[in-house]
Each structure stands twice: as C-alpha cells, then as structure tokens.
Image 1 (spheres, rainbow, N blue to C red):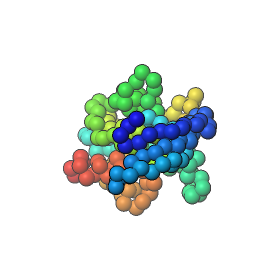
Image 2 (image 1 turned 120 degrees about the vertical axis):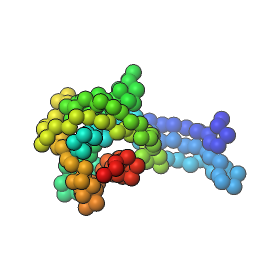
Image 3 (image 1 turned 60 degrees about the vertical axis):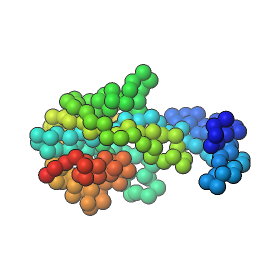
Image 4 (image 1 turned 180 degrees about the vertical axis):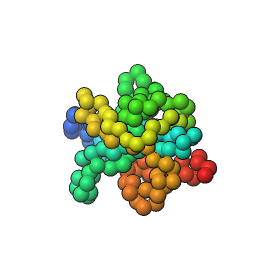
Length: 193
C-alpha cells in the first residue's frame, strides 16, 4: 500500500474510444487522519503530445481549426482554434508523436523541437497527461485543409503572423486550454519581438 492512499476497488464503467472507471479509495488527509471509502468516476483520458508550430524566420505560427463535440453545449460554433495535438501511439515517445502529428496536421516537418513541460490537464476527473512542445518549422503562406481520413479529421490549417496570434489571444478568440497555455508560454518566455 502507498503511504498516502489505498485503492480499494476499481470498476470499468465504459470501454470505447476512451474508458471510464469508478474507483473507491482511502487517502491520507493533511492532518494525518484518513478519508475512507471515497468514490470517483475517472475518465481514462489520453497520453497526448502537443506542439506549437512556429517559424522563427517568418515569425509565423500555424493554427488549426477543427470541429470539437465537447463545445457543442456552450458554443454555437463548435469549430475552434487549436495547435497540433494527438495521442501518442504504442512504441512511440512524446517527441516522436509531436513531430508525426505536426506533419499529419500541418504538412510541415519539425526542424527543431523544444520541450516546454508536461502536465495533467484535469487531474480531478481524468488520467490524461500532456507533453507540450514548441516545434520550429518552415511555415507556408495562406491556408490548407489536411487530416487523417481514417480518423475523420477535417483540419483547416492557417499561417498567422505572431502579432495576429497575440491579438486573437487578447481578444479571447482562442478557447482551447492547451492552446492558451502554449501561447502564453510562447509570449511570456520565448518570443522576443
């Protein structure tokens, strides 16, 4: 038993594209006592690589527009602005997945990759774990439509000058959490205008 928690039971509630589990556990409280028989449903989530595609010569960022069912309830238009992201395939590491996803979703090769950080996006309800990278690329002008047909992807990729991306961020036109995190890191820690 771990010194801070004990899993009593784990039950699979759903097994589809993602999984849903119900766990019952005990855990040590801050005062040293134990909480007993706590039950939570946990979404299996995904092990994901995310990449912000940036051309340091042209000062361009590639942003993607995709349909996302998770925003249907709150957003009249479920096509949102994002960066490159995808599930890490078996036998693949996070960096390899980020490079593969960039090629699949933008058509661009990653020339240089920079590890930003890894994190849990929603640890209260999900086992998801994200690896965030900056990928230096040679950006194209304009836009293109890409995506994997076998994954039903329909991705509009567009090249934006960094000033336009900052404006989109400031105007709250970007509502995808990981994209906001990546762009905030980019403007606070990386990009020097």
